[in-house]
Length: 472
Image (cartoon, rainbow, N blue to C red; front, side, top):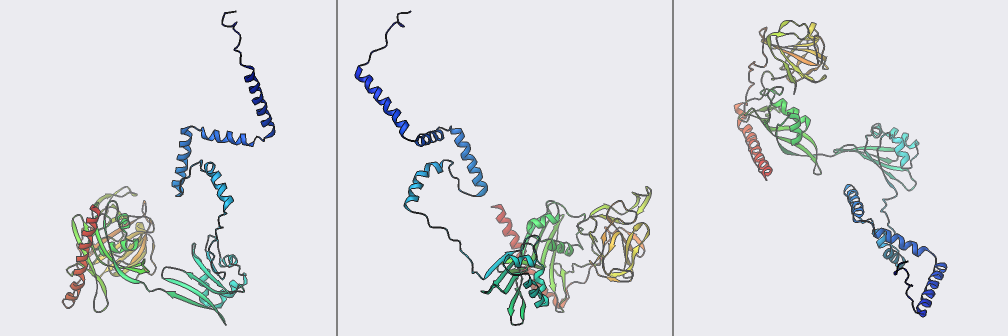
């Protein structure tokens, strides 16, 4: 043994040893007498308090992510434990008042049409028997309109104290609502149509990819975009002339109910800049009530023929006297222009005329040939089908739909083969010069300018304001 290990342990006074023994005995007795719940609670609290900062940050971050997705305030993951004592004390002192939901009048019920709903299922939802559906629909011929349900449509029921239907109301559009009201004879049907306020609206757009996409981005509806293409269709070939950077300005009628736009009227004035050249159009109704479009200085926008019979199509083959036929694999004159477009795309008559043929014609498949006066003739081939009313011997108007893009006859894909003849000779329709229609008459010129000049001035002002706003 070393010298250090042979040392005896230090001696404590006897009184100290007795005191320590007494304390140990008291602690043992306490553990036997008192329950262990307090000890366990202290362990749990200690465990939470000793979580690492990294774990706490992760939990807080998760809570913040959830709150951001649900727009709910972020709550600390420890709030329930930290505040439990205070909440218990407050709960013991005062109980919070129960939340009372606001209830509608017991005789008023509302239901929203869901997928698969019928009028019978909606009646059942508000507690009406199925027999009452027949009574309602048989009460008036027009009452059947309540069975023509649309997804999301709201029906409002008014019941009497006995639970019987006394009024049924539904809004079928922004302009129209229908009502059935009980009377002595059954139910009376009533239609309420709101009269919209008509105002003018303005849009400006720059073409980045296609006219339809740029117009939609500017806020122009599809129907107004088609109208604009029709107005300028005599001067601009929307199949091949459109370029990135082209611009348009449009002032049109807008129908408004309670501050909400519910529909559109005609284009009042428009301006289209294509390849640096600007075209203008103003809608004018003469004293006889006939409306047409004219340039800002009074020349007619309408010409003898429109530039292209298919809106927004792609030219897949041009006029050529030495083209190799894609199916026959021979050099063969292509005496027309091919416009590729999706199957079913409408085809329009290039001008007023009489239909010489509406039927099959060899490799052209379904074909329409129109005679325009004594000089001009147009042909439309490979149609999927003909428009209603278009038949041999019928008359058609310029811009009227005469058929639809197809791939009948000798065709490799859906397109329109379009030919143009002058005195029986095929000419290139893309290079053909067309005659102008009559301008504004001298008798109406002053009246026309009084309408067109303010519209042109407004387009200039609106465009300047919008461009200035975009630069901010």
